[in-house]
Image 1 (cartoon, rainbow, N blue to C red):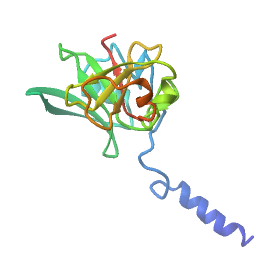
Image 2: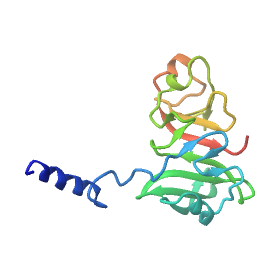
Image 3: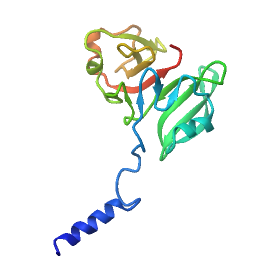
Image 4: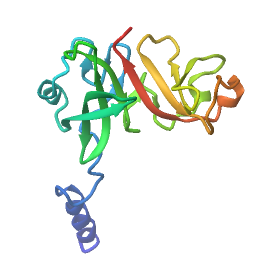
Length: 182
């Protein structure tokens, strides 16, 4: 019997709330597909309280960002203070234009996530654009066979034009964008 006592103590410590485990883990899987981003779909209104009901276990807070002189009212979804997603409203302010996934726990198409390599997603060709040229280092590439999913990569240096396909192979996904503009 004495051999089981340390094991039992360890088992109790592991299963007590707050004693062990990663507190930032999601309460359920969050995947991005053409149909939806997590539990958010094309018809979801841009409303913090409604999104909070769709995403239990996460905090939804409004915030304001200024880009290029324009002020945008956005929504931020966090878990234990860590940024999970940000939501951008459509021009009417009532619908969601885009969801940007910022957490490596979120998958896209059931298998890719932040940190996935370009070459594992795109094997022979990619439809990409440079964001904010000429000083931009962000590359946005549409997922193969998808109308709404885009992968964002950071280039090692600013670029005026798209680098050749082979130069992109080692890049890793820095965020995943679900666009409601499809």
